[in-house]
Length: 131
Image 1: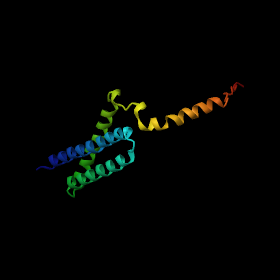
Image 2 (image 1 turned 120 degrees about the vertical axis):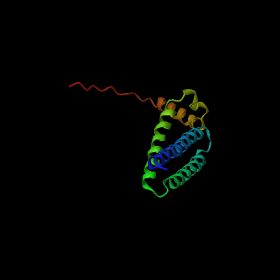
Image 3 (image 1 turned 45 degrees about the vertical axis):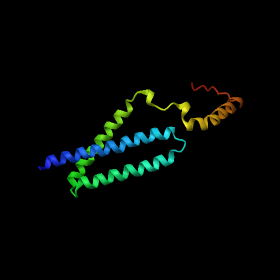
Image 4 (image 1 turned 30 degrees about the vertical axis):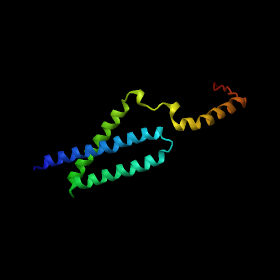
C-alpha cells in the first residue's frame, strides 16, 4: 500500500477512536445527571474510554510516528465534530432539572438559604459614584 493511503486510514481510525472517546464522554455525562451515584459511572467510563483509545493508538501507529500523528489528527477532528453535534442537540434531550437527583437533594438547601437571606432584612445600599 502506498504511504498516503496508510496515513488516510490512520486518520480514519483516529476519527473512530475520537468518536468513541468523546461520544462516550457525552453519554456518560448525560447518564451521571440522572444517576443517584455518578462517581462509579465516571470512573468506569473514563477507564474504558482511555483503555480502548490508548490501545487503538498503539495498534494504529504500528511503531511509526507518521501514523501516530495522522491518528491524532483524526482524533482531534472527531472531537470537533462531536462537540459541534452535541451543542446543536434538541433542547428536549437535556435532562429536566426537576428530575435530576442532584437538584432534588439540594432543593431544600437552596430554598432554606434563600428564605433565611430574605428574612435577614438585607437591604441593598445605594451608592452614588458621581463626583
